[in-house]
Length: 196
Ligand SMILES: [Zn+2]
Picture 1 (tube, rainbow, N blue to C red):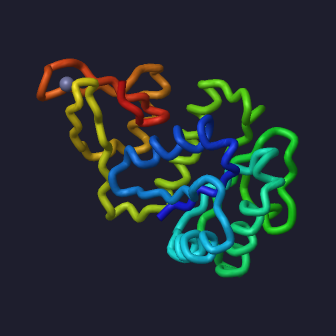
Picture 2: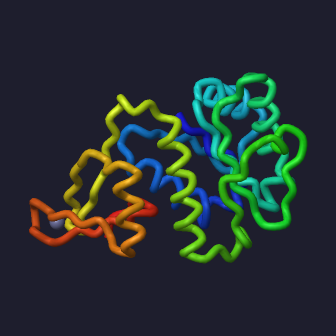
């Protein structure tokens, strides 16, 4: 389980696209807390998920840094696994300084502004997060990519290696597949793994 720690105001612009990309890899599952959680929900739903997560993506935006929920989630993770916490993938918003436990964490990406994040920045952020997640998964575990056609057809293919994906990104092209149902070409963004 990959826990996505965030502020609910960042849900539409940051969290949902990121989750969609992560879950386009069939083997990866995410947990996103519901809007407006309460204390019971924290105890019964969030804490058990934090218990089993092997990675925590922390979208530490201006709003998230002020959220008591996000800070409690960080505190729980820091305490629970100290000195061996799960992989923390830290995404910052420009101008926000990580403090305490977070100071030791590698910053995976910094976005200029959570409210007006541009598509290219979003793609780069998703790409970086996916790269880190993939590195954490033992190579023996085969991963699969969900490819979706606009006709509704979905198929799973072995996820190309990161090296191969990076080569496609370098050439500024998309990954291409054929739809077996309608014969249309399906294009997959190599950074976000999203089909179009
Ligand atoms: Zn199709």
